[in-house]
Length: 90
Image (cartoon, rainbow, N blue to C red; front, side, top):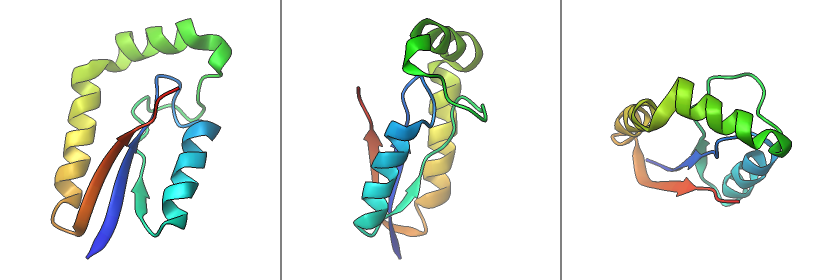
């Protein structure tokens, strides 16, 4: 069984900051799953905090984001020996 980390991004999306965390966990031997909760191809730059916040609250929200993460964890729980959820903060 694999060891996995579910890495959750900030309101900005899967940016370089999150990719760095992902690389660090991979280097430690984890399979890393980082769902793109915003469902955008590009992340928001930090200078667009208000736009990122508005997009998250208006188009995603906590309930939809939670459902995405919950579904991923349910998919992974039977195949992973150890599953860790990490919320990256600024």
